Image (cartoon, rainbow, N blue to C red; front, side, top):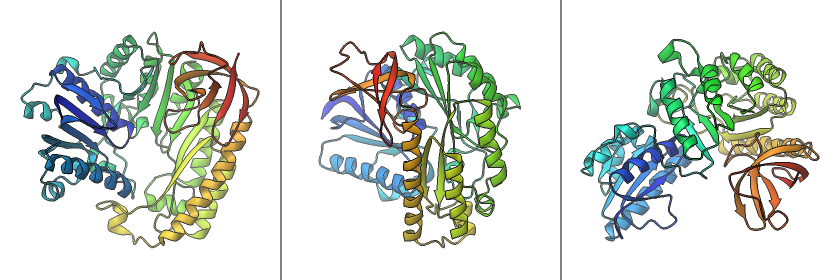
Length: 433
């Protein structure tokens, strides 16, 4: 057990990671040694930043808390704190079930942890973060919460209503991160197309992205978690005209069947969804669309699922993930519908959908062979330098591999022009130009 050392363990999405990075900076400023996601936590204090999105994520968070609670009972840990979405959602239950935890914090009051440790929150460091990603890229959270009311989603139960961060504060953070060597920004929000409505009474995501793009030193900007209904079309001009705004959009569509979309409370039709995809591809030539689909929502018939399969064949999404419906306590679906589709049917549909997407992904990747693309190098792994194009977000998208022995001068965090020599279903292989 290391004295004056705190281990932070982050579970869940990149929005949680940003909170952990802010806490990291505050704890360092308070005089602690801090580690993040250490393979072998050895500090005298542990902080678990939890995810409460779906059952699997909740189970992972609880298992981590229990593992650390066991360490505490064995005298290998002095204090254990829990924060994040799971404790925001199930605070009372967790306090009762896991009394070994010294204190639970929610999603937004983690700054109280400083007070409970006898320290003070440093407001002058509010745009400072200890980056835990490779130093050349960072996640940039522009808002919290969500005003949408999708039937299946528990996130608004945890994060509350949409709250945009002030534009100037975000720009200050970008400038600070650039001064620390960050070149690439993954702009994230639960619903980024809603940005600005609460502060400026209009959607200002296009203005924000344009202003970020104008900050010297910002090389790439990539946009995550858009919503298809009432999409702000002025954003497409910025994506098309600004060379450092990647032609990439992460927009969760969930389904195409009108019946399922209505049951999901998505406030969009299948035809409107198709029109949006056509507009995105027309207005931003070369755009790569990442989306997420759901199978097995209550009321999804075999016919509705086949409509989804046909839509994916038609749209040929460059990037797509999918998951099976999971009933979440407190959601509209859980209160209103019967979870009437057997698990084996859900899993069969999920497997069929992802097999289709794997074939499409392989074809999309194969079409890149022979092209020259700009690539940023993330790391060296074995015999290869591993990088990404503007069409690839960290952690979730395909990567590009370049022979380390052939190009020993390549440096992590730098950009290179590469020619694609071959491809498999997900990754590309390249040589330097």
